[in-house]
Structure formats: structure tokens, C-alpha cells
Length: 160
Image: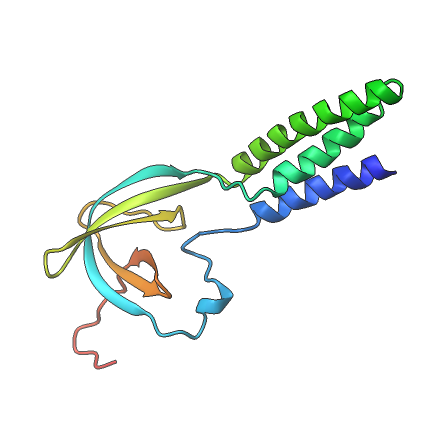
């Protein structure tokens, strides 16, 4: 039963770490109802990049525990102890690799030019929008984090 619980713990930890998102289409709860700074800009270029996965240690710990339990059930007492140590090390390495792979994210590097001529680069997860050179966009900065989104259409003569 303990092997099953350990395996379930590993799966749950990896699933929870994969739930974190940096998508520009998902706003973090703490950013709701906060005033954001908005700047007009024009896209100079956009290219796909990959944001490397994180290693919080949860995957390594869960993998190490799972490997130790699995290894300790091999052979007699002495063989089980040796196999448990080897299983723990191998499980930790594999758990770290799984966590890092599960938290990798496809993203875009968007280089924009502000109206004052300054250039900025923003890396954000791929969202629903695509960006091409020359597209009018806005930079929305909240709590030190900036995202790029298409500029809303301006209606001539509108005061709001």
C-alpha cells in the first residue's frame, strides 16, 4: 500500500506543478482589481522561444522516496538496503527530469518599439493572439510583470 501512496504522491506533485501558468490569457488572482500601467507600442518582431522548466525539488523528493521504497523491496535485507539507496538516487534524478520537462513552456519573445523610440523585449507564454511586425500593441504592466496584447481599436470622436 505504501508504494501506491508514494506513486500517487509523485503523480499529484507533478500534476500540481504543471498547473502553474504564465499565459497572457490567464490573470493571476492577486493582479485582479489592480491599476495597471499601459503603454502603446509597435511590434518589431516576434519569435518562438522555450522557457526552461523549473526544479522546485518536489519532483526529486517524490522520485527519491518512490525509488527508495521500490528498491528496498528487492532481495533480502542487505540487498534491499543497497537497492533502496540506488533507487532513491535514480528516482530523484528521474523525478527532477520529469518535473523540469512538465514545467517547460512554449513562449514568444516579442520586441516592440514604444512611441518615444525606446525598444523593449517581453517574453510571455503563447496565448491566443499572434503578433506580426508592424502590429499595434499595448504593454500592460501590473505588479512588475508585463504582458503584450493587441491594441484595442480606437473609435474616432469617442471621449471614453
